[in-house]
Figure 1 (cartoon, rainbow, N blue to C red):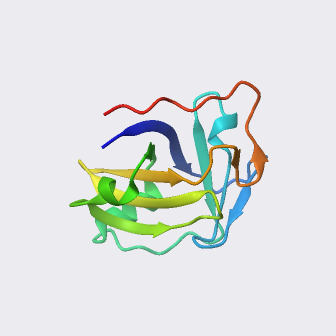
Figure 2: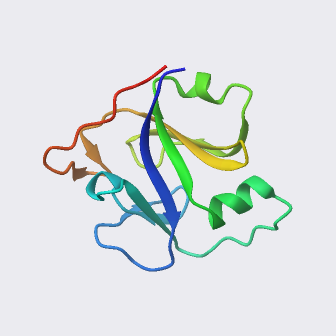
Figure 3: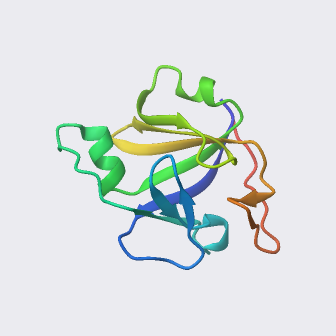
Amino acid sequence: MKKAFDHIGIVSMEPHAGESWVEFSKVWVTNPRSHPQRIEYIRPKEMPEVPPGQVGLWKLWHWPHVAYRVEDLREAIRGEEVIFGPFDPGGIGEVVFILKDGIVVEYLQYHTLDHWFGQPNPPGWKPEPYSA
């Protein structure tokens, strides 16, 4: 499977500049391409009540996640423990969250890398190259 680092996602209850609304998951997200450490802040409209027994989903809302851009989302999730998705968060591509090695991992298969939720990429931004 070919993948490339995309961002680190952190749940936040505070508004951040440049947020975009994701209707499917009822959250605002920031553009990690604009953050020097490639951080995406995720702010839920309402924090979901998830029992700790639902380990993967609980971690999704309480721990950071690491995100990778993948060439083939279906190949990437084959045999994995899917905890949320796949879904299209707003015309940018398809996204899924899995629980892997005890952490939450997001895989994204973008339709285009030309923008982030309609926001232009920062000057000089280039995606990480894929690795096998």
